[in-house]
Amino acid sequence: MVDWAAEKWYILIIQQLSEYINVYMNSNHTFLKPGKRKEKRMDTYSSIFTRASTRKFDSAPLSAQALEDFETFITGVKPLVPEVKLTHKIVGADGVKGLALPKAPHYLLISGREHPLRNTAAGFCFQQAELYLYSRGYATRWLNSVSPRQPDPNFIIGIALGKPSEPAVRKPGDFDRRPLEDISSGTDSRLEAARLAPSGMNGQPWYFAASGGVIHVYYRPSLGGIKGRLYHLTDLDVGIALAHLKAAGDHEGKSFRFTVNQSSAPTPPKGFAYVGTVE
Picture 1 (cartoon, one colour):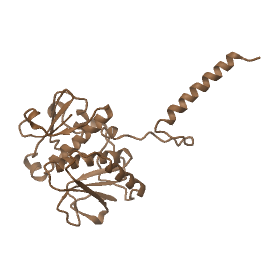
Picture 2 (cartoon, rainbow, N blue to C red):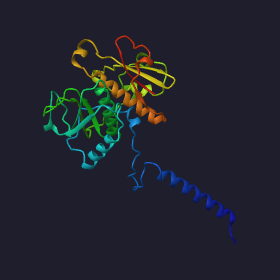
Picture 3 (tube, rainbow, N blue to C red):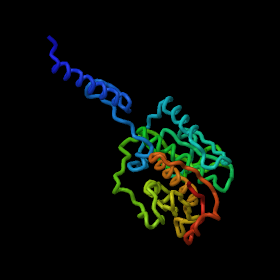
Picture 4 (cartoon, helix red, strand yellow):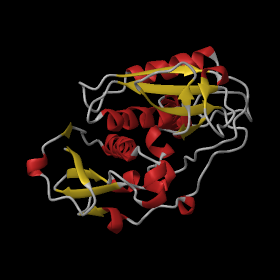
């Protein structure tokens, strides 16, 4: 005689187990031995809210596969401005020079031919690369003071990278950033990610005018005072902020299209210059 009640419960349990396995297999987890479950990998958007630069790197180099994956990622980054041609190379300590450089196993050297938006395009591209590295457990530091040992007239900036020798993690309250009302007008959910972008000497040289899903972007050509005499890459910094805007847009399912049309943009705040518009 069939126990229909027992069979009903059996079928229900099998269905629930099947659903659980399906969800689990489609997540970023993998089945491992007890006590060795692999954690879900952080994405580039999540990296924005915890990333911290570091000067303390493990001396061990990244694996050949990790470097290959990194190159694949950079190749897939859509340029901010197609006509700006950027190049890069990864070298060791013997390939760079500069004062007070952190000791890292790798240095990423970024170059590009002159163009009004060259530096902004470089910040946009390689901040995405920085977020990618951080999401995979590596650490970085933008380096204004580094230069290639072999002269390169088109050199822009460098990034130290490697495994951190101690955690490079920041809590939300650790960010030293201006409030949104000081750097923007209007509202857009993507602006918080841009607010947290890193910048040379923490100058935060950007301003955003948001309206109807469109964000007009401005920057300060000079930080003024001593900072302005020591640091000259504020246009690169605004590219970094644009990378954060894109990551936030990707997270929210919004498109990212960068155009330059100053006639449609509001008048810049005093001391700022128009960069472009995100639509």
